[in-house]
Length: 311
Ligand SMILES: C[S@@+](CC[C@H](N)C(=O)[O-])C[C@H]1O[C@@H](n2cnc3c(N)ncnc32)[C@H](O)[C@@H]1O
Image 1: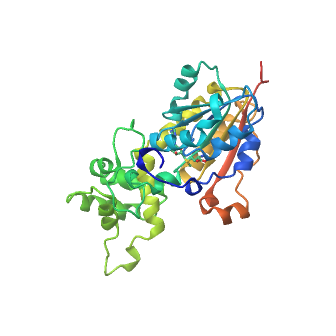
Image 2: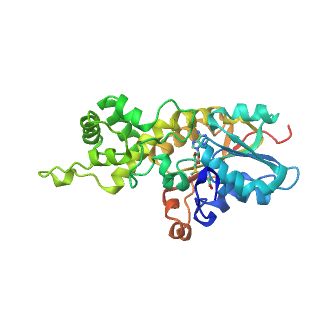
Image 3: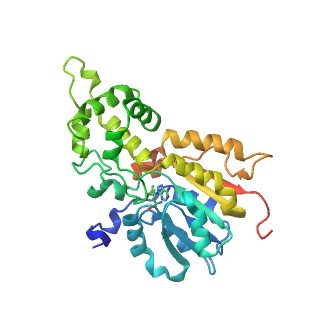
């Protein structure tokens, strides 16, 4: 039994994506200090720890206390090479301060959702379960998904569905949410029923599974403040890395990709603080996608902070 009373066989946990590529770009010095800023259930962290040499260290961070507890149980026999912090990567300054560090030699950000969290009924992330509409797996965020769908205007809902779910019919779904919320939208099932309302005359207007999962994604992005937090990480990455330090980011969704593309353009080249370590974002190989469907939309970007290490 893992913490929180939730049993999951370890073999069933989130499968880490592009492990070989992540390690190749991130671990330029096996004796350095690294931060897995999105440890989740510890897939990448475990691989990193196996390759560190004394006095190398890994700081494992996650916003979600339940996922972090699973990682802690998986990795606790690694001894004093590993430390755990619960919080957002937008405040890595707090982690550096409490560890007495001047910067990291590498930061990994594997964005998006852990499949462990998706399957956890108490998280309210999946349209396939009928549970409270929560999604606030970080106890520091100000509102959960039920409060978001009750409080936002129809145009705000349409905007967030378009921006973070790439939904062509964002207006239609925003209207359905607003009409249904008068009767209360408390559970994931209430939301799915509101969205699925069958329009007999326009069968093409019925929501499909892909759209449902992107609607849930869009709400999660707003509830967990994913975009402003990614902005903060990118804005401070140069400050939080030592010279020669690496930033490796795995993204999965269009809105993340658009942001990273702009940041990469503005922060690399002769004026920027970083060197891009790859010409174009890397995608997983066919074999990995065949083995792990979740990897199919992954894009890896890796950057090195300019300046000699040890300067
Ligand atoms: C795709 S999962 C990471 C999976 C992990 N690499 C593994 O191999 O198990 C993304 C994780 O990032 C966490 N996360 C997302 N945004 C975060 C933030 N701003 N600060 C800290 N953790 C965050 C989520 O809670 C989730 O556990």
